Amino acid sequence: MPSLNSSAEKQEYLDALFTGEERFPLLNGGMGIDFTDETFVAEMARQRRIGVFAFSAPGYRVLENDLSHMTPQQRVQTLRASNQCAIAQKTQHVRDQHEHAIVGANVMKILEDYPATIEDIIASKRIDILFVGAGLPRDLLKRMAQDDAKHMRYVPIISSAGIAELFEKLADRGKGKRPDAYYVELPQFAGGHLGVLKGQDPNDTDTFDPVRIREELQGIAPGRPVILAGGIAYRDQVQAAFDEGYQGAAMGTRLLLTQESGLSDGISRDMYLDPSRDVCVDAHSPTGYMARRLDVACTERTAESVRQAIRNCVSCVKARDCEFCKNASATNGELQQPEDPHYCIARDLTSTRLGIAKICFTGSQIVTIRHDPLYESDGERYVPTLAEALEYALNHDAPQGAQGLQVR
Ligand SMILES: Cc1cc2nc3c(=O)[nH]c(=O)nc-3n(C[C@H](O)[C@H](O)[C@H](O)COP(=O)(O)O)c2cc1C
Image (cartoon, rainbow, N blue to C red; front, side, top):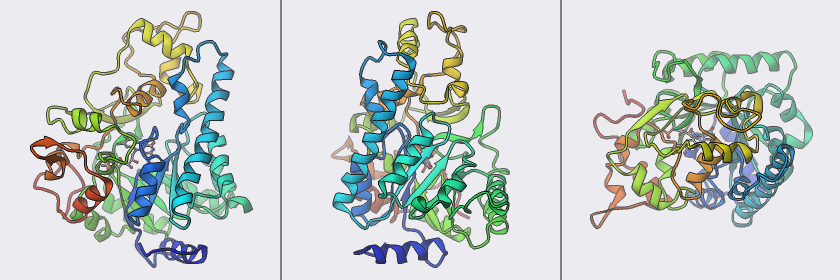
C-alpha cells in the first residue's frame, strides 16, 4: 500500500480499491474476542496493510468481574457501556499513530449488542471499512446509505453467492445501498465461526468452491471487488486468490500467531504450535454456527462453572439464539441436559483472550503452518512479530500437502 499522507490521498486510494482499479493490500480477518486489538491494528497500519478490529464484544473485560449481583438487564447495560468505551479508546489509539491509514472493523450480526456497536463505529468516524458476518444484516444497507455513514465502505462476509444475491435484490428494490465489496470466507479452511449452520457440511468443497463463487459474484455484482479468506497463509495462496479473480486476500490464523495479536505468546506456543494438538469442527458454539477450533478439552463444565456462567450472562448472543442459555433452567441455573456440549462463548473465548486457554479458534491450516521455521528460534518454539509473520508469509510458498487453499 502506498504511504497515505492526507485524507484526500486516502479517499483517492479507497476509490481505486473499491472500483477494482487497484488490488487490496493484504488484510487481516477480524478475530474476536479482541485478538485483533488496537496494538495489532496499529502494527498492521505501520506495515502498510489493512488492519481490521474485532468489534464483537470489544468491552469483554467486564467479564473479569463477578456480575452475578446484577439483574440481567444491568449486565447487558454494563457490557454495552464497556463496548462503547472500548470502541472509542481503541480507534483513537490507532488514529493517534496512523491518521490516514485504512482501518476496518468486524462485527457479528448475531450479537445482542450489534446494533449499538454499529452506531458506535459510525459515530467514531475512525473506521473506513465495515465487515459484518454471522447473520443477515438486511437493515444495514439502509443504515449505510444515510449521510452520517457515507464515509464507510460496507463489506458483508459471505460463504456463498446466494447471500450476495439477496443483498443485491434488496438494493434493487430501493432498500439501501449496495455493498461496496464482498468478503468470501471459505468454511472448509477458516477459523472460528463458519458460514454454515449446525447440520451443514463445512467441507462441502463443491458448494464452497472459490472459483465458482467468484464467477457467480461476477454475474451478481459485476465490477465489485471480492476479497478471499480461509486457508491463505503463503505467497502462492495469495497469488491463487488473485489468479482466481479475487481483488484481495485476507489472513486469519497466520496473523493470530504473532506477538502483537491479543493471543498470549504462552497460548500460541503451548496450544497452537504444539504439533500434538488436532483441529476439530463442531456445533458446540452457542450461536448455532459450526466452528473450527483446536481439539483441546479445556471447556470445563462442572455444575458450578455452568451456574456461574448463567448468573453472569451478559446476553452476548441474542437470548433467543443462545444454545447455552436455552438449556439452562430458569429457576436454578443448572443445565436441563447436563451432557449438552454447548459452551458459554462470552466466558470461554474471553478466558483465552485473557491468557487462560479454553476455546481456541483456529483455521484448518494451523497443522501445516506450525511446522514453518518461522516458529522456531534457538531450538525453542517462537512466536514471531507481525512484521516477521508477514515477511515470511509473503515470501514463501505453501509446502506440499498444505491444509489450505489449493494452488492450481
Ligand atoms: C481466533 C479466531 C477468531 C475469529 N473471530 C472472528 C470474528 O470475530 N468475526 C469474523 O467474522 N471472523 C472471525 N474469524 C475468522 C477470521 O476473521 C478469518 O476470516 C479466517 O480465520 C480466515 O481463515 P484462516 O484462519 O485460514 O486465514 C476468527 C478466526 C480465528 C482464528
